[in-house]
Length: 53
Image (cartoon, rainbow, N blue to C red; front, side, top):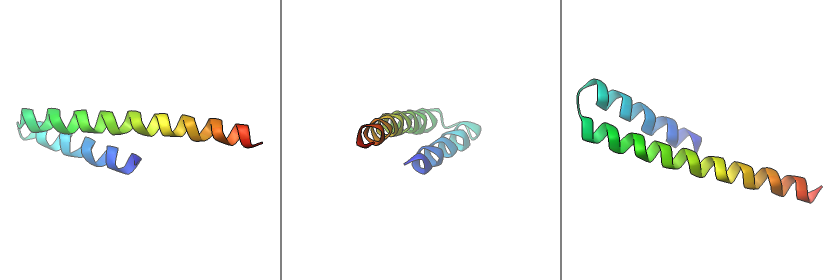
């Protein structure tokens, strides 16, 4: 999932360099959403690992 975040981040950077503001903003927002989902799942799996012990 973190790989998808990096892919959308690269797409946003490339689109921003070429001047496509709407596409860059869309890709950046998708990357941000996926990153926050990744963080939530990481925290949940960390807590689940501590509970299993």
